[in-house]
Length: 81
Length: 81
Length: 148
Length: 148
Image (tube, rainbow over all chains, first blue to last red; front, side, top):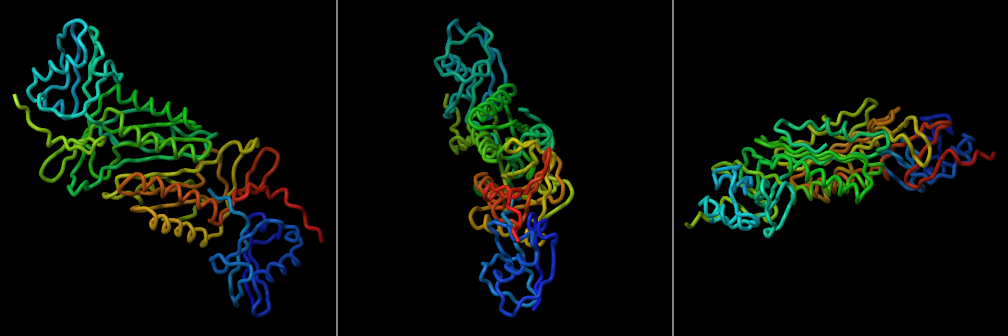
């Protein structure tokens, strides 16, 4: 199945992309997708940040199972205001 | 000696004046002036409010001694804001 | 900026005044005329002040706030005369490097203003008018008439 | 009104939005770009947001505040893109019948916004730039480079 990946701020800069489509196996979790991204984007491999994860704009945990067409956002520590 | 009396809000309306000059004996206190005003302005006689007193724009107590030319304000409970 | 005015208060003027490149936070409080109070349907409010002393006491609140919190600048403007429903009777703005100070200073200023600054409000409501004394909640229209 | 904008924020627009004849108190918080942070001399800030989710999370803060305090209306507008020194990055306005609710709701909204709403700030300072993560105080420029 295919999911849409959104990367922001320092993650976006390190990956060199803000928005990409990725193929993942059926039933893949957010964690499995993140591991895949760290393999494919070398800039993400060293990231030590405490991230939050959102699927279709709702915060989820790393073990959340993805569905086809999901929009998956990797959210580094926020600093609005 | 002469002092200037300032009355505000409900005191002003009851006395029918906002600003008046009054003659008081040397060494008169704020309390003595207030008693005089209550005699002279019948509308003030029944006033039961807890007042504050200011001489030349600084809060003082009832026993404060007046000096010639003082501006004496009788300040009913405030309600700005 | 500590001022009385008989014109509508321009919030932007206060914001410009307190703005500063070193201030990361600006808080404002705007008190507006409500259309009701304690079951009375309000038409407008009339404010009266003791000019000179009112501004002086507002400035004193600003000095006190600056002694308690790290603030950059403060402004208080209070309207006098008739204030229609929905318009501002008072605007307070405080700037500070950090938001906690700005919030606390602004709150302090309005709380103390209501207690201490010589300004009075008369409610013009359906069927009458009444002087308000917020220190006590007393209604002054009910004060007993002169006896002698 | 929960909105992102890449233009200067118009505080008056928020004030008009939250204004109401039944609201006697309006509080605002304005976050502005400071010229310094932790000893660094700042030229400007760049803000990035997750559009859609950012507005949704801001609206959620407003709903939460309305559940905790009696507020009439709330508005939050956050700027994205480059924000010069002294300009507002965020403006929050809350109206309420009484001031205590307006103050608390406004404070809650900015405190929670900083923790939860997906918006990020990059400082452009003399000699470099750095992503800020205010949750932790971490500096992300220092994150170790990829090892493989």
